[in-house]
Image 1: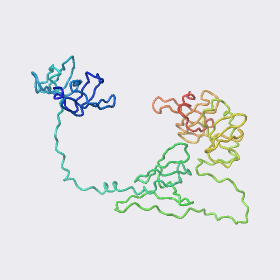
Image 2 (image 1 turned 90 degrees about the vertical axis):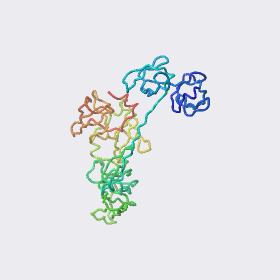
Image 3 (image 1 turned 45 degrees about the vertical axis):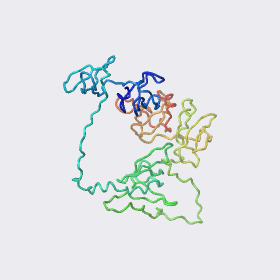
Image 4 (image 1 turned 60 degrees about the vertical axis):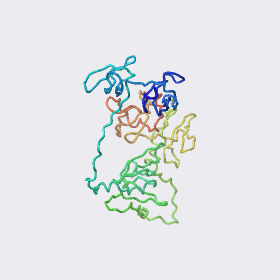
Length: 383
């Protein structure tokens, strides 16, 4: 009898047995049992129909299958012991009905799909947008940023392109995966051991396939090479991955970062530049002691005298920096909101930008760049 009252997809409650009290839904029905899905245990069990009862809830759509109000349809608005109050929308009144007379009910409205035969063919613009992106030929290529761009000289790999001629480039100057949107006109592509500029992808409306990447002659300097018999002292070449080459004389005029010995800087990965070394990229400060600092240069760890390193000073908006001047902001990490040569407007690193944010003005010469701190370090160093 109980199995005859149940239907597939009905919500039921187990009233006896091992799974007493659990809610489930009917998957299939047998002569005197039912296959029930128990989501709380991620199980499917076959249980006797007499151990199951329909589990109604407020908001369920139901129909009376027997009794005085047989055929009445509505929504459950209230439940009490053994009965439910049904809102009958036809008569717009509430009627109490025993749960034994109710059955889950769903109404489906049939609708005819719109005939699209009248639609015209795709427009010329639609066909152009649906074509394969011709700039995809540059995905995976090694490139370098050129021209008037904030990342000029930085190398990277093209990860994606757009029909408008932009590329998402993963630059190698960051110590984490960061994609920058750069126009193809500001990129040079690597051909063997040379770099050659590539034009921005021009999309036309012809039915031709994607163009082949152009092969251009390598860029060569206009100044002729000196004669072989002239001795020229070898100097370190500028690494295009470095942000801006600084002369050694300029670095030596910068004060020695004695503040690195303060224990509060032990958790900050300050960017340092070495004096008298061939390395032109930023070193990562790790520890200080005995007049020397331990830095990470690429994958290698090495020790350098404190007098032979200088901090990399802030140079643009959105830099992550640490304050090196004694005061209330000493050893605190910030992000630059507005950059100026004399002073910068900064906000605490990790703080939400927008209305109500705390802003401070700090002299630019008192800000040193750092690699973004981790969350655990930030919670300790934040003011």
